[in-house]
Length: 364
Image 1: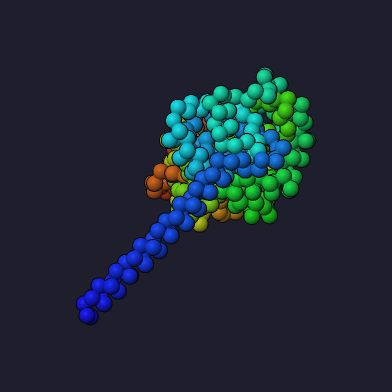
Image 2 (image 1 turned 90 degrees about the vertical axis):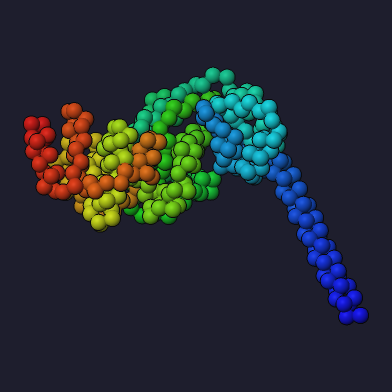
């Protein structure tokens, strides 16, 4: 009798567990179904907002999904990537698109397959942001190549409400800079990606600047995880990248320069990068004088240790790569021969002075 009761008890337990498993599976299935269903539907079917985005050449499904989610056009980049992967026969095309949160995922997929925006035919302006220029020079280029003035541009990039909206759209990129604005000259300095931007009749100044910020967010997508695991945040990495952009020209030199900066930060030594002094002075200098080094500014990395308050220009992807992945060496110093472009690295101050006397004495 005891054995029979045991068997019945075990059977009840197993049946109860099976029932719980079935119920959990049903709940999970229903939840998953509605999650996928909602992800395929418009984010806001009543929205009248038009968002201008750019799909760069060479973008894959995941890149495109991230761009759409970053611009609040879809609710899940994972579902977009998964759905289009198994839907098949998608030939997404690079280009500029005008989209809306009122569009369904199917409509966006169809649009991306068709390619380009059907609203604007030819651009009415084209703004090229060179690598390593600061935000005031970008404003001048916008003034020269569009109907927007430099003053309007500078007013927009300093508009607190607009910046807050950008932070909400690009939290991974902008949260750090928004939280450390006390000594920063311009919050968006260094966050406008160097590239060429086409301006259409429908393009607003807000959307133009948003494009530049979005492109920087896209450029940093491959690096966010590495930055999260490092001792620096995104703002500090972009600040280093802006110095590296101006100090080195080749990828190899930039990674070595980055290594010097990291070594100095580890020893709590000032970075002593000349481009920071030029930015502190508010003017470009080919050569930095001893008098220049006296400028009392948080941007003067000769006077103050640490990374600095923020970027001093818009760095290229090459400089960002170097800032995230420095070359590990024992170098603590470097100097550049402005006439030849050669850069000399040294481990000790004595060796640094020796290189100065050898390579720079005839250039003064």
